[in-house]
Length: 285
Image 1 (cartoon, rainbow, N blue to C red):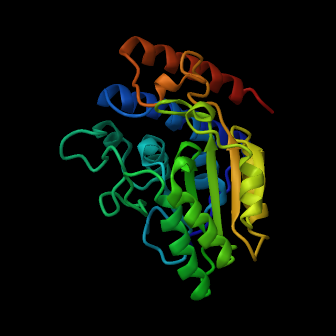
Image 2 (cartoon, rainbow, N blue to C red; image 1 turned 30 degrees about the vertical axis):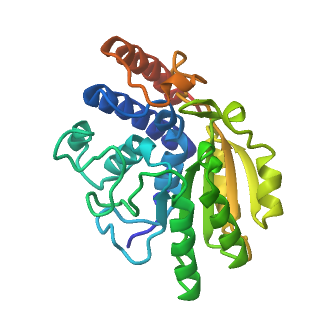
């Protein structure tokens, strides 16, 4: 019967490492795409698909599945790599990313690949899509939940705040949004482009349940998602503080890697660093 995969914390860390390595190889092959955000979200995607969410790779359209909406669609390499590792399609297809005729487009497209719930392109739309799904689920008394991955930079968009008000009005307790709070966007640091803080206070004032976590701490990610299941009368925003390009020092914290891909030499260095990290994880008790 379909349901949740219950990987251990250690296994999820190893999966996140695998996803990061896959993303590096995909971007190297494509020579186009978004590195920092995709790599920074690996822990969150690993935790969602291998512990938190109810889903079935063998039956992607299973009615009882949890829905994941990717609002910041440019980080789709991490979604594609996660879906492939979960068994939605063969991993070899990852290396067709952004190639002519590929199912792995530069932004996800619903219907092109199994497991893709929404088409994304323009930023700021995903939370509205997720809220609409959650409203349907609530009105039809469905048990499934909706998860929405959104970026901090998207919060420059007015549509985000319209969705925030909508979700609070309809008390969408079946909606959990996770913000990738990595503090960068294509034009620089978020607080220089358009100051966003205090984000947690803003969401609380709009009627949301808010949790702030370390977006690389697997236990915190899982605990925050589980706690959101117990909140029935309001939507949840998990503000996940992340490091763009996590685990690859020459990428970390630099907004230039928002939409830049590694050279062959840089990719080899990144894989070497990630392999060293993998050995450290394997030695953990």
